[in-house]
Image (cartoon, rainbow, N blue to C red; front, side, top):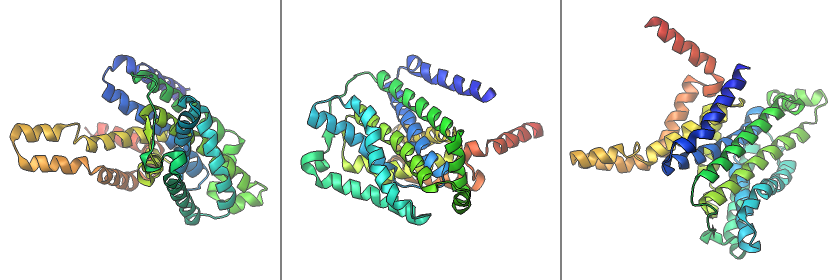
Length: 334
């Protein structure tokens, strides 16, 4: 009951956020945060609950994004229909791949998902007449205000988390965990492990594809290097899961908030603080430092992940009892 009340309180805060905060910069960050909640939750299902570490999120994300963009470019249909179609396009990409590659395990499967990203990226680059190639796809935004995009992103984040929560607490969820813990033992008990891995992949691909379609509508531009990016999409999804807590329902939300914050912290030079100090003090060294920091968000990600793995190996949500116990112990000592 307490967990439900906390979840409802968080949802209420998020629902009122754009009405209270008028700055489009912070609204933009929150839209990215909600988009990463969807992607992180999807990756967490296939990797955290089913134990199949995947680098293929960029393939599903890009498929959904191109589904929305191509609807507008070739059929003159609103790209918003991509929210309904993009997820199924990603599933259509993911299931044949899973049917072949789920016969591999561990690092071999992970490398196969990595190859899927590259195949689709090169295919989108080469097929210039259909996808626009490196020129990409540009559409006109539907709204000037960021508020409609925010509420669409919030709805998708809420529905993705609810659906995954329902799945992992139903019969398939127990089968997913059994596969993660010991696939051979699960098969010996009569569980069709190939089918349930396919089911997990299908759900994960669907929500990642929907997030890609949202990205197309919100940003208005995509190209193969953006939406099929290993680092910006696939690696980011993994970091969201690891930092928040693999195999936890609310871990992706916490991980998404932290990763978006860290990324923007470095990209903006600690929200412009370093550039401001460089101008005020006239220090050339601070100016050079500000430029170096703005391009060092990968370093920030690395430091954060190393700290989490060393101190909180189960992620922030997974090790929350440990964090709470340490905090109360500090208060008692004071």
